[in-house]
Structures are given as C-alpha cells and as structure tokens.
Length: 462
Image (cartoon, rainbow, N blue to C red; front, side, top):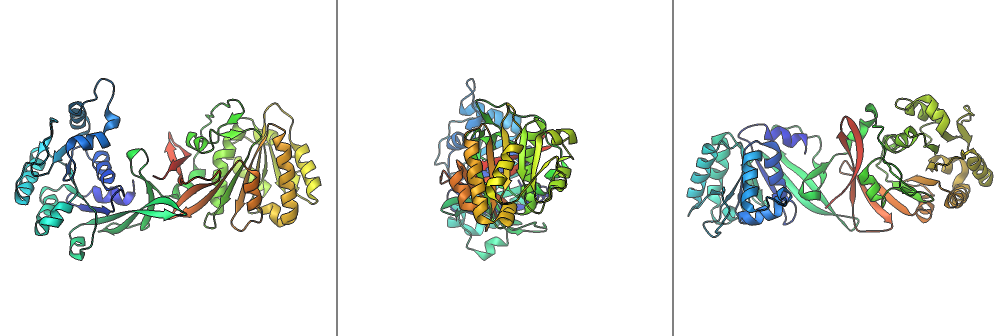
C-alpha cells in the first residue's frame, strides 16, 4: 500500500488509528491491512455481526461448491489465518462456526477475553472496527484496550468515526485520516498521515480508491523510473479496426481502444512534468512501433527529432525506426526521417500527408501542439489540425493530440476529438477525467509492475 505503513506494521507492539466519516473506507482499510500483511490476524466487529461482514467483504471467496458462511470461515482460518470475532455484548446470535466468541458483559471482560484469545491463537495483529461504542460509553478503559498490543507484542489497528480528543491522539503510534473530498464536482478520496511515530514520511497526503473492495494508493513517482525498464513485446491483436493502447484498462477507458478514423485528445495540466509526456510516449508509441506499424510524430520542443530517436533506440532497433517513424521537426538535418514544419498550413498538411506511407495498416499521427503553436501560431495550427482531421476521417488512420496548459489549441483538440481527457497532478498522483463525452467519474493513471515491466493502468477512484 505505502512504504510508511509497511514499516510501522513490521514493528511488534505498534498501534494505528484509522479515522474518517461514514463511507470513507475505514473497514476496508482495516480488513486489507490484516489480510495482506499477517499470517494470523483477528478482526473484531463492534457494529456488525459476522454474517454481514462475510457477505460484504468475502463474497469473492464464494464459488459454486462452497458458498456458505461456514465454508468461507474455514477457508479464512485454514488458508489465510484470518479469524473473525463478534463483540456485541450478546446482542447478535451468529450461527456461523469457527467464530471467536467474545460474549462479555463489560469492557473489562472484553479486554480480558481478547488478551486470552490473542495468546491462545498466536495472533500477530488484531483490528477493532470500531472503538466508537467504547469511546462513547467507557472512554477511560480505552487505554487498557490499546495497551493489549504492547503487552502481547502484536499490531493493534483501531477504527473510529471521529477524532476530537487531543489526549486520544497521544495513545497511538500512527494516525491515518481517510476522507471523501470534492474534485471538480466529483468524488475524490484522500489518505492523510497525521502521525507516524519514528517513520520518515515521503509526503503527508495521497489519493486512494476503494475499487474492487480494496484500498489502492496512487503515488505517481513510478513514472520517473519507467524508462529504466524494457517494455513487453506482447500486443493485443486489432479487431475490426480497433487497436490496443498499452494496457487493457487504458483500452476500456477509451471505449475499447483506438479506433480507425478517430481523434483522441489529452490536455495536460500545469503541474504535469515534461518527463511524464515522454514516458507516456514510451508506453503507447513504443508498443505501436515494435509491431512494425507506421507513426508520424510532432513532439514537444524540448525533445528534438534526433533526441527522441535516440530515446526510442534504447528499446527499438534502428532499422525498425527508420522504416516506420517520421518526425515533424524544425530541424531538418535528418531528411530521411523528418518532415519540416513550416508555413503555410496548407503546404504543411500536403507535405505531412504525402510523407505518410501507403500500406494496408493504418498510420498513427501523434501530435503535441507546443511546437506547432510556437512555429506556426494559433491560426495556422488550427488550420493544419482541421485539414489533417478531415483527411484522417476519410482514411484508416487515427490521431492523438496532446495539448498543455495555456495552449491556444486546447479548444480545437476538444472539438475535433471523439474522446477528450484532462490529466492533472493531485497530491502526487495523476488524475484523469473525461471532458468529452463528459461523465462524473474520476480515474487515476497509475503504473503497475508486472513480470519486470511497467504497464499503465487506468483505475476508477471510487
């Protein structure tokens, strides 16, 4: 999840408090920490009976042959070392077996029983979801409850709805605040470290999601290292004029993938670094070129045609680049692979289209408008994009347009495209929203390392 959380969970006797409003993800967070980090863990619910927790959390463990509460509990206990307990002062009558019973009449009995079960079952960590009833009724006993973790050298994870007591904050080694925030009229979830005793923090706040009933935190820093790793040569085969980008989730975001005769637009926010753009090239363009497909590129002024070619040569043989890639450039030193960007717009369009190689396969036009804006100006850039779009509509080609904050052609990119998106940096993560067709969803553009490769993923933030 995060290195700071991993570190504190590796120190026996530490306690963590997770607090946030209803629906902020506290229960999911507690469950995930217990199940993913420990061989034997105990989850205690003070609010819901065991059956309800099983239905909400562990429905993915059901199958056609074993779909009962008893079978799920047995699998949790035998294979994952996960124990569940009820702490409800006898108000719930659970029929499920293999449940640790904490049938206490007082908080003192509850603490005594909990200590006993931790010892008897060799528990490594326990979670109490939530401590609200204890705080509300017998706050003075809370210290004894928290102290169980220190006495048994186990990790104690506690959840609560609110934290308004300064004294309470001193009792825990770590305090994490989960919050539902607003982002451009959409839901955005944030995780804030308010206390992590003895742990050095990279940053205080992160974006996270509860997608697929799991907490997933987005950092964004992996994009800085992607160029150090080779890309996989696997590529999803095109079907009926639709081509894969660089990952299945990216394809799903684009309604199935890149379609022939279509235009796609991405607008990069002010805080998006130029290195991110190059690394996005690395994922999308390198895969396209490795399949011996044709591409014509107008890149950012920061990266000349020669520099970009050298960049690709780290993973793509030079002969493949020479056969399949054309660069739009103001530096025409390499006539074999470059198309000079010069006025007027009509002549540039003719030169650009004539450089396109006539093959049975479509050509991808990848255009960052910085260089066009600087060299041609707004009017000629607009004419070039409009004319090129008309030609693409009558062919099997497709185009990706990249505009940056302050670009005069941003509106044109939205108008010309079938799908237009905005990428912003929020709390260190790259957040993706659709401008056209507009929806109310927000996504994280993340990187996942699989089999030694980094692959982009577009994950809904829910």
